[in-house]
Image (cartoon, rainbow, N blue to C red):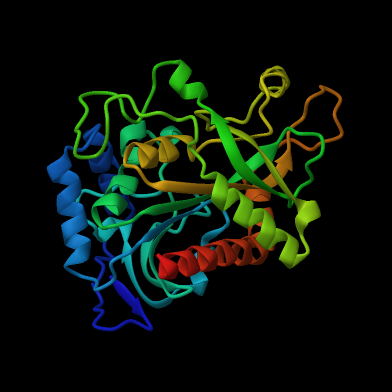
Length: 321
């Protein structure tokens, strides 16, 4: 754990010998166990709660290139994933691999600087396991961001798409983060997803975008998650567009499903980091991760402002309750 403007934080020395071997060993260990029982997740939550006084009400997941969303958090304490017992590690460039605790707009929060993806070799239950850790730590709101390819012809690189709904393509193939025995301490066996994304927070986000003067850059649409790590073919992108998909990525959907299973209120948005090629002779460049990270970094200030303003409204509402 490292401290930044932290009260009572301590530093944990890292073993610098054979760093590469240790990292690979951690990755393989984290992948060995396909899922977590309630007691496993509670042990992780207890470990963190014993080491930070923050009792978060909001959980934030930072997408590719958007790690600076956590920079506005004050009185922070940070935990590297590799130092959290039985926690996976992020292996993707643009994902720091750290859990941040602190305060944002006077609200206690925890933020993931880096998430876990199916294409890294983790099952979906493990990818979304941190959401259940958040729940056991007291989180009521999940605020998720991601980098996505735009399919809606109205979208431009750098635009923001507020997620109104999703199409769970991986779920159509029977791959769900809720697969296996259900533990009612987290939620019901058959959770509804009709209103997965909170309509009130979507309305708040549009209001904040108008106040920021970026309404023309902010859209509302449907997201889908594919397994990756390869980007999509032209035929696949055409199919997705016909199905009503506005943006496509490789994350978020399973996290949202897990959050709604836990009865969390969800708000999420995509940063459009590239435009999907819908024709073989398209003028759009082929998608690449370097571009995704670069666009994320160039727009992280605007994304951070929007997220902070939405959280500020949540804080106001919580004070009046």
